[in-house]
Image (tube, rainbow, N blue to C red; front, side, top):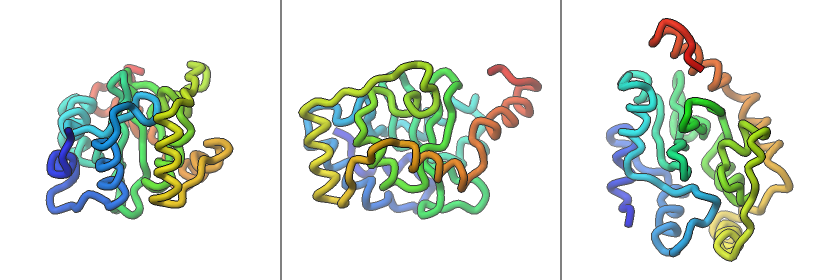
Amino acid sequence: MLTLQDLAKNFPPATVVPAPLARLLEYQNAVPDFYSGSFELDHSGADSVYHWFDRDEQVARQFAIFGHGGDGSLYGYWFYSDKTLLTAPIVFLGSEGVGNTILANSFEEFLALLSLGYTELGFALSKPEYNVGTRIDEALLHFRGWLDREFKIQVPNTHDTIVRAAHNAHPDLGTWIEQWMQRHYGSSII
């Protein structure tokens, strides 16, 4: 069982875990199954992003990873420029270094995306050619009911509006990572 203290270690010091994220943690700890594809909250996000960025601590500190997919892909906040928990977008860092993208402008919008039931949310939104499907099961339906009761979040008809708005509001994460790779490795490896 993941504790709030463990989850808090993924965030900058003295940062309080956002209330909606803490409530999702309570939900995750109370249900026996995956509630949205293979997504789950994670205690090792700080270490994971540190290794994702090849131990570049300065860059890794710009991310607060709170979850992962079944393949090791990461989900979290991106604190670029002067972003705070209230203004940082939610991003996806693909396990193989591909599909890196901004998903949502807020954690609540991310919750709405989770309600769609994609088996691999990040790849479904960033790499449609992967033909990632959905899994509509009892666990997802229960999760949708919880989102409605707790946050008044309804299942969106599609992810397009949320993702498009987030992309329009922030720099392109894929390009930013390509630029980091060129500086870090001397050339792009993706």
